Length: 323
Ligand SMILES: [Zn+2]
Image 1 (cartoon, rainbow, N blue to C red):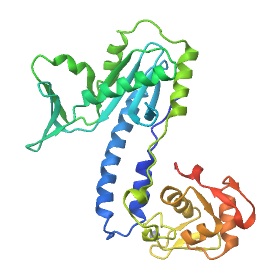
Image 2: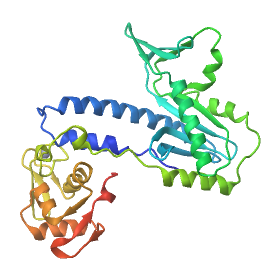
Image 3: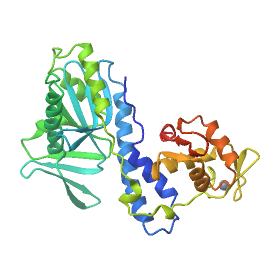
Image 4: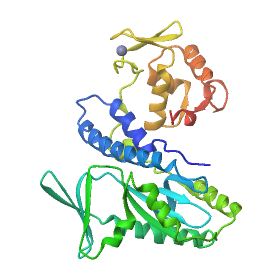
């Protein structure tokens, strides 16, 4: 059982929002910048996730967790590895350049292209995650499993240094290439099993059940009005919103590309940006289709779960959200 590295909702929503706004929309530049950052973060996590695939089966690898630690506040972990002996929180970073972990005044200083920039010390960040995970385990009546922490830098173009005398922190900092060997070194500290197989499975399952992915209302977040969104169906080849539906397929007026399924992307965009529930009428407005019957056939063909009958039928688009 693994929680695979699927794109987080925030990334899917930013992608959908960017393509549904005109290139000269006043918020487009900010959205594209944010999208770049979120995408870089996700690519880093995915490359670390690929390395973790090489771990033996006794580790359960959980990705992108967001758990509630005190009734209302959440903490996030990029990866949590759960074994019967201990667990490891992995925080993924994407730093290029020279990284200096300053231990006299705890902060991370990154030097790149002659520019210095200070960041919150990731070692402090993982310590906070660790204490919150401890609280979470206690609250859910799990035995207190030992918790290790690792900072994994997905970018290979890095040199890492620290204040003289603090070299032991390198046990907690790793690149992609040394990730598995660092985990193996940690493992030696915990020879005895703390959980039965059954308890370990129960722990992983509870974590996945209690995981509440960050799901921002993206229009509200950027203060964008629904009427600003581009309607109709986007061409999968040239990205123009100029697809026409004739005889059971979509054709692009711009590049003559033809597609039978181009509307699925539009319904996904609707789910991500407006509402994961849709009626025939709302779908016609968004996809710019005139015929109730054609829309009805399209929605039925997708075999979406629905509530209500005939005109009042509301289809659930949840199943379309993750490609
Ligand atoms: Zn086209």
